[in-house]
Image 1 (cartoon, rainbow, N blue to C red):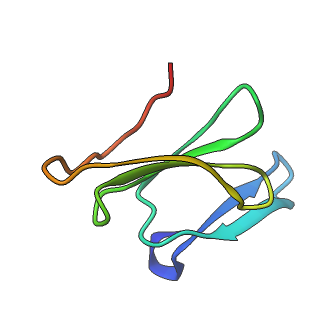
Image 2 (cartoon, rainbow, N blue to C red):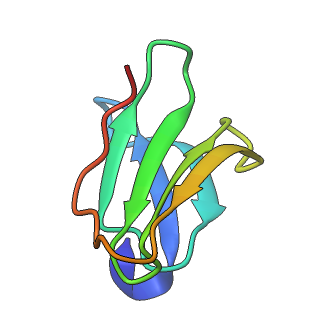
Length: 72
């Protein structure tokens, strides 16, 4: 939810499963661990969050504007 500065996960029935605040999220990937990999182009940052929204890991660039992230 870019406009509201948050990431929201819904199940197949439309029930909200997780939600947390992230400044300008533009791409989100669910990782096998259950965590979320969130890219913020405006912040030039890729961050991994757990299901509660706690930051686990991040990478910031001074030069690149990442659109999508992928953790290997």
